[in-house]
Each structure stands twice: as structure tokens, then as C-alpha cells.
Image (cartoon, rainbow, N blue to C red; front, side, top):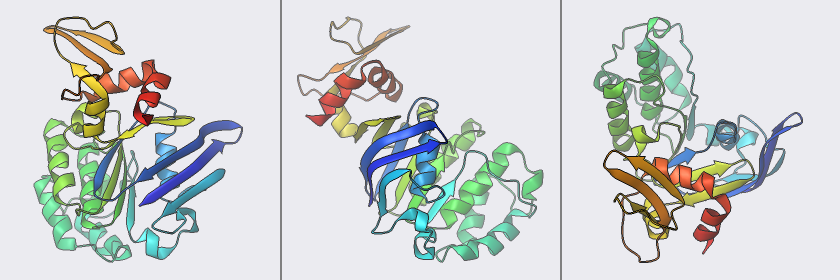
Length: 275
């Protein structure tokens, strides 16, 4: 479990995060959403210990990430949006660098590369951007860690590769692993991520499972306009509307509509989820 309490961070005089608190539990693939500049990447780097909080605390299974204890580092993997084109053949990179993670499996790395249609004999610094991204994703999954912090992992992937990623992230992470995926590409991942975190600079607006979201909000795909709609988007077949669920009826959560509804009515939605 990761517990964040009153977390704040700034770059010089520019505040990025202020008084952020949340709990993150194993066995989940979290989707971390938020507008540009709210600090999604910064939060991931704080959670994995690459940065120290200005104030507040982060507790990861009883340890403080910025202490950089080898026992914790060996249980986590941070994948940045932009990955490095290493001057190695892919299989060589896995064989040498996998030693840093005690559960790393070279055979699994090569197997995932094959599923991703990446040649393990190719040099990473000569790969296309998509092939390089898939190589790093395969390496991360082969490390078999408890905590994954993935920043925009589907950026640079084509449509078939995004499908390969969705399949791999559910297949090759353990049942008790915690995966946190920061993304703007919610359509790429809407069938994978659950719970959903919607971050603001000074607040966590939503940190809830899709089941809870569906219980609190109703997603209407009909033609009749609802007077209490928090968000309305016209579509060729009618409209997508989001409004408080007062009847307890189930509906399919639309993540883009959810995100837009939350940011149009931050206080209303936050209060709704605190009930």
C-alpha cells in the first residue's frame, strides 16, 4: 500500500502539487488523469523516489521512497514518457540490466518482445520510437515488480501495439501488483484502468473504482436532455450526459465524459464522492 499525506512539491517558486492525500492499494491498475500541468508526472516521480516532497509524507509499505532503499527500488519500476535509446541489442540490455531486479526473467522479456513483434537482436538506438517504447515496456513487465509507475505508456504506439499493451499489462502483472498509469489517452486504456484518479494541483478530485463512479454518477446516452447534467456532449446519435445518480441505476462509465464533468464542476463532484 502507498499512503500519501498532505504532499506538496514545487519547482522553485512554481507550485505544482499542494496538500495531496490519497491511498493506493495493490491489486489495482490505476488510471491517473488530469489536465496538463497539474503534476501527474511529478507525482509519479515522487512516488517512486526520484524527487523528494517539499512537505508531507509518502509511505510505501512502511518505507519512504526518497530514501532510495535497495529493497524498495528492487520492487518498483518507473517508465517515463520518453525512453532512452540504449546502445545495446535488446536481449543484451535485458541480460545486463535485469540483474538490478531480483525477479527479472530474461525468458519472459524475450517472450513479450516476440508478442510485441520486436526483434530482440535489434539495437535499441536504431529502433523506431514505437519499437523502442515496446522494448522498454517488455523489460518493465519482465522485472516482475510490486509497483509500476508508467507515464503515458501508449504514447508513440500504433493501434495494434496499443492492443498488445492492454493484453500484456493485464497478463504479466501479478494479482497483488499496483500499476499506476498516467495518461491522456483514456480511450486507449478505458478497458484496463480501474480505479480512476483525477488529479488537480491542490486536490485529488476523484479516487474511486468504476463501480463507485457508476453508483455516484449516471452516464446517459439517450436523446432527452437532462436538466441536472454536469456535462453534455452532442453525438451523431444523440448525446452523452453525466449527472448525479439518484436512482441507483447502472450505467457504463465514459472516461472522457467523466473527466470533463469533473473539471467543469470540481466542488460538486468532489462533494458527491465524499458522501
